[in-house]
Amino acid sequence: MNARSIKIKAHLVEPKGKPSFYGYKAVLADGTLIDARFTKASKTMPDKDCVVSVPEGGCNVSYAKEYPVLYINQVTEVIENAVDKEKREKDLDNLFGKAE
Image 1 (tube, rainbow, N blue to C red):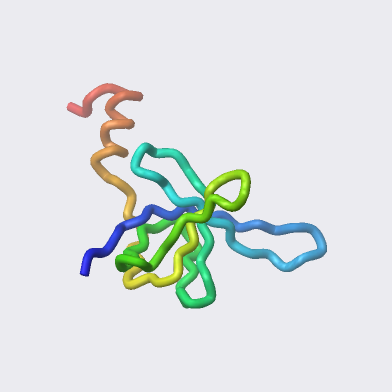
Image 2: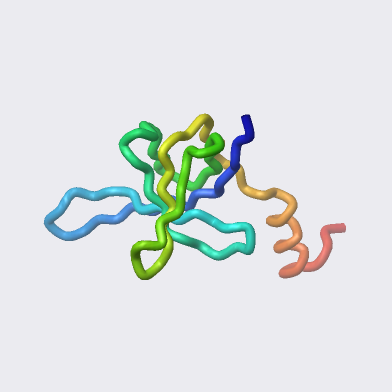
């Protein structure tokens, strides 16, 4: 069975006079963000940025709204602190030059 790895960005939303909740964005292959939602069937809702492993058929994209929304129905694994170290080092090299 093939699984997809989806990068998720989580942020806490605290509306006035209402209970707080987490909002999610999924990072697409080209780096753009789309809204992501975890359904009740997924039983996994991360509270920080991570990478989730989703089995084939475990998510779908809805185009019914103005912007697309990724619905995640099933999560097999949550990998926290999965920051792309190589990319981070390249960014630092671009900002400050190569480390000696």
